[in-house]
Length: 116
Image (tube, rainbow, N blue to C red; front, side):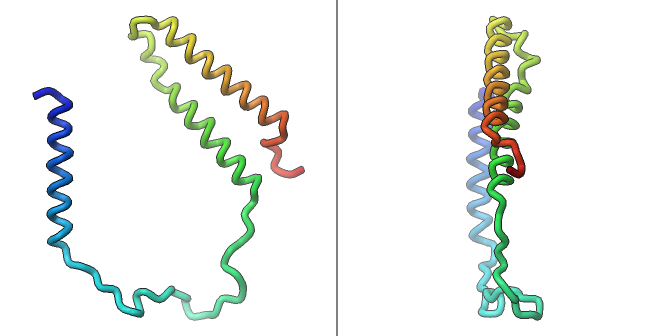
C-alpha cells in the first residue's frame, strides 16, 4: 500500500471509531439551573459590551494578512532543491516586493496610525 492509501485508511478508521464511541458516551441532559447564565451573585449595572476600537481591528487584520503571507515563505530555503531554484527565488522576491508595496500603501493611507 502506498502512503496516501494508508493515511486515508487510518483517517477513515479513526473517524468511524470516534463516531461509534460518541454513541456510547452518556447523553448530558442539562436542567434549568445549568442552562441559566452564571451571574456570580450581583446584578449587572450596565451593558456587558464595551466599545471596540475599529483601529485595533484594522491593525489586527493587517497583522494576520502579513503574517500569513510571511508564513507562506517559510519553506523557501528548500527551494534550491527544486528543478528551477532561480525561478523559485524570483517568485519569492516578487511576493516580498508585493508585501513591501502593500505595507507602504497602508502606511501612506494612514492605516497603521493608532490615533488621528
